[in-house]
Length: 305
Image (cartoon, rainbow, N blue to C red; front, side, top):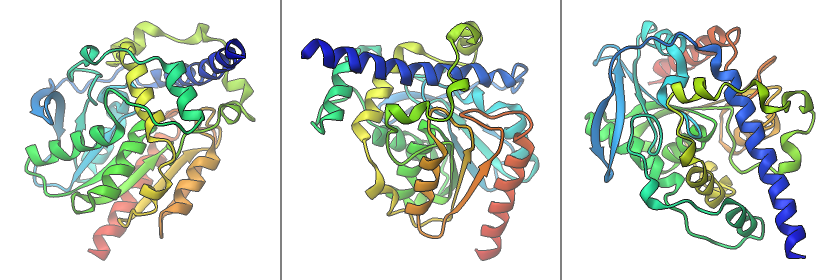
């Protein structure tokens, strides 16, 4: 019986990891990222956190939170400069355990299969760090920069972190943009539902290119454990009161579009938009529309304020 359970968990975990790695391959739409400004290191929340401040200091700040294993570089020059050119100061940072921020190998390597097994049974478990810890990293960075509040943008796991910031630190949050994210963990059976062609073999993955974007593969068990431990965050998301824009790809193979829709339904008065021809990635053809949607969203908020 035990062998059967472990075998099933192994298959489920492989589905999750393959789906995520496939999405990493598509991130190479930014091969010429050229924001050559070096990261600044600050001692924040007990760790060394790397960040960049782009744009005019007096402009409204936007804190951008990237997803699982990914450094700030994955946002790409086009999105960052698009927001800066529209009159916003962009704060980029590397989550703990990624990019130029402190690597936390000293916290150990959790057994993902065991953690996922406990999660699937609803049994509590420990984690090296949590999504709440990562959310506070972002809040503490704003305090470090003496920024009273900011627009928060998060993608994938970064969207989960951004949701926590918006819910638990509303005084620090001007607005929330949750991009290709979720308020809970998808069932493994849903990851590939209707998206089989997106889950091709891993031969297309440019591992060297992924590392060039600051990915730190050793952090995978720790960050996935943080996601598993967070579980269903519906109660947290329902408490979000700041203006919220939820954006999702129609063809998302990792976090199906229904999860974006559910997130939007949970947040009072939020706006939901689906992009065609977009999966769990940021295609070149979608980026200009994405920038326009975010900027227009901010302008509406400015009119209200």
